[in-house]
Length: 116
Length: 113
Image (cartoon, rainbow over all chains, first blue to last red; front, top):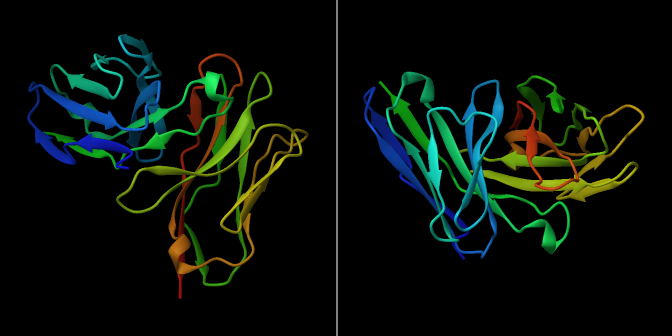
């Protein structure tokens, strides 16, 4: 199994450009998440989804949009990139609580994004 | 709000040394606690977890005990290997509704031969 796959792995953007990060999981997980990882700050939740067609804001949602049109995919969009969005972005997925409490999150390998 | 505090790194050890990485938490209720590990160039992987007070999580020689009285979940390993070099994240999740993970800032471990 591929698990959680993120594309692209690296990207450099200019301020004001837009782009979409793609996350795909093949584990039939209900929940999906987008995090950003910055030095000295750990991982912070941007947006999450508890099922196909649903999304919700996390801790740091400003400047990002998401969509979950299919259960296996979770897209993260930057409409107008800013230097403050330079970060490493991780997607994760997990079963819902109906599968039992404390389901582990499975992470992709990350997308390193630089905004100039 | 809920938070996790980890010791700052890097932690530098020689192979076969004893490892402790400290983690304390602040939460309004009784969370579940986790350790995740991130190897270079990879995403995070669950290392171990504990869901209630006095539980001990263990995996790959690593252990951590959920101490409610000291709000701690310290990670230990008796004899580290070079392959254990990674960043270790402590995290908590409240056991209500959507299980959002709150992460600490991570501790980098460097093990030399």
